[in-house]
Length: 152
Image (cartoon, rainbow, N blue to C red; front, side, top):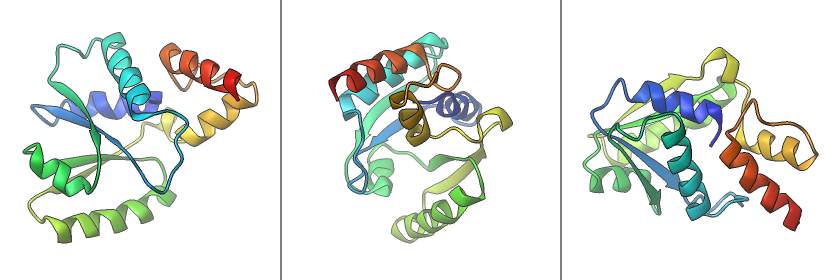
């Protein structure tokens, strides 16, 4: 979870009564961290920024996001956008999600200007090459990245 993700979480809480954070098990990606490790980081980061008193739930998502949303009585999906390059794929996904379930709206929140370039892929790469990523992720994430990278 990057600081850009946390920024979207904070801002999303202004829009909804309950925020469900879904951790996707994307078949097209090979994540460095397991779903349980990612869930642990999110839980710790939320507690660090004192959001634990807010209505936030964290789940893993297997299968279609629209089915996950429907099963959790969600009527919207909030997605963060960093740049125009994100918009094209997000636009396609939103169109497909609408066809799958037109009762679920997608809301896009633009990254704050100081977070617009942060991606988990870049963070992992910079960290693996010995760079300082503390401006982009929490100390919780850095600890887990340190463990993972010492094993490889």
